Image (tube, rainbow, N blue to C red; front, side, top):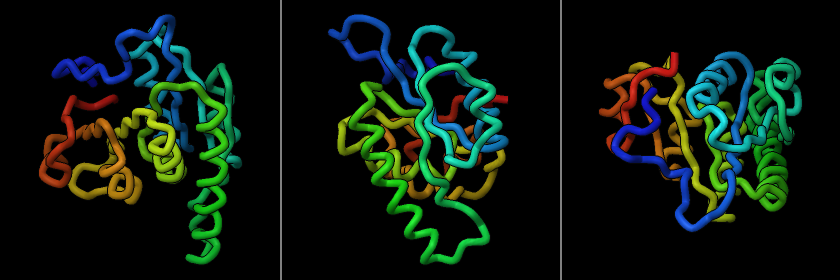
Length: 175
């Protein structure tokens, strides 16, 4: 993925001194794999902090840095009332995280916890960058649908997805 395409380096804010802090949202499995590939591309230009599901033990072992935890809103066995309750709880947790963090931007490849984080990030005027999952070739993810209007930058990894997200940036695959 070409992170400099079209001069879209949204993370650099003129006038600020020092390294910028960027919040990275990790999810289980493929979401974390995609974000770790992006971190390799971004390198040491930024200081990173991370947000993980409260039940994600694997991703935490793959990173170094400050870790915040948010309740996982997408346990598939849960009914709609329990999911709604978890989403509300997740929003309040996300609000507390955004209040504590001095990250200038939040980047996600789409795990379920992204939506409440993006909502809270907007309240604190933080930049939001969403990368639709590489497994999405012809259909939108639920997180993508919810986060598209909240995203300052929205990337797709397949050219076919530009039809579904007209304002998205196609910059190739992270894989």
